[in-house]
Image (cartoon, rainbow, N blue to C red):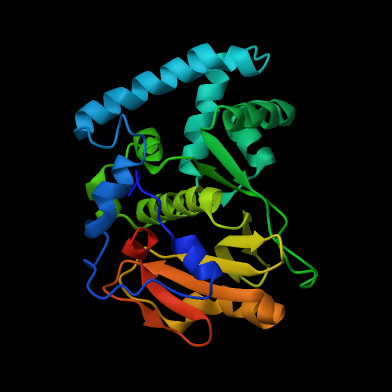
Length: 274
């Protein structure tokens, strides 16, 4: 999927969903794709060769390029931060917590995180809110920018994605949200990517807003089935936004696209590039 121009984002912004009818079911169907990632020089390699590529790539970009984008005293700390952020990809960013875990002051952690963003290794998504109340969580979420790179950094192969819920969750969300970012870059109309979460546990992993104020929302699940509760955050946004809410999708690893009421559907992960 990494080399073509998909239209999932444009479809949802138009109020439609891809009609997937016979996708392979379960994490196993997508494990190899998420581990491979989207780097052209990496995704067609064998796992061993891909690991060597990423090791060399990280050593090169951090060892050589960090000094070009910032005045960093200890380059090794940037590499340590990257690996820690990888374990928390698809999670809320806590600079204070990261500072404690690395033994580096908070100001330095923030500065080094910006360096990793400048190097296109890490991406920060701001929270989305617009007068929906005072329950929204205002912390940004962070992502390693490529699922193949993430797989290398956390030491997770395809078998771990299949077996382990936590690994599958962060890998599938990182893969899916970064694909949405990529598609948003070439969508027919400009769409900015955010995330949504409130203190009542309602969330959407990605909220894309166009300049005209219209919104789509996507939640990512690694499960092969979905329930009404998986749409809780999307329904909340739909109720609050009315006609501004164009569509909401839960991406999952099931076989087919399933309608879940007005402007909502469960869509197999394959729908991202179908």
